[in-house]
Image 1 (cartoon, rainbow, N blue to C red):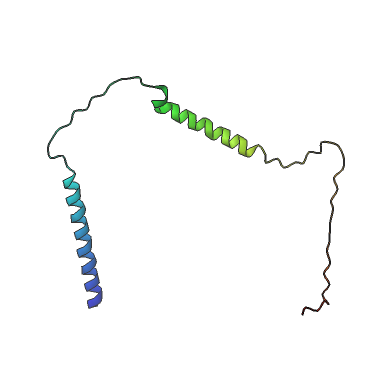
Image 2: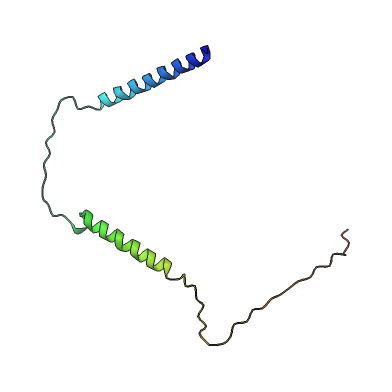
Amino acid sequence: MKQLTRSLGLKTFLTMFLLAAFQTIMWAQDAGGTSTDVKITTDSGNWYSRPWVWIIGAIIFIILLVALMGGGSSRTTVVRDGAPRRTVTRTTTVDDDVDVV
């Protein structure tokens, strides 16, 4: 029982220590009361800097990829010359009575 209490106390201490360390790091990242001005402009920019162009491009790419990958998965076999198909079966035999030296 003492080991369980001791390990639980150690885990609690390490958890609190890590949380305090993370909190200290977060406080170090704080600006400390300085204000920042945000300026929003309506610059049209280039056509490729707009997000909707990238979204539409990605959708078209996915549609083309699916069409190209799924186009070759035909389940029917087309015989183009009209000739019947032949199946060739080849068998091999092995002599078991050969002595290996």
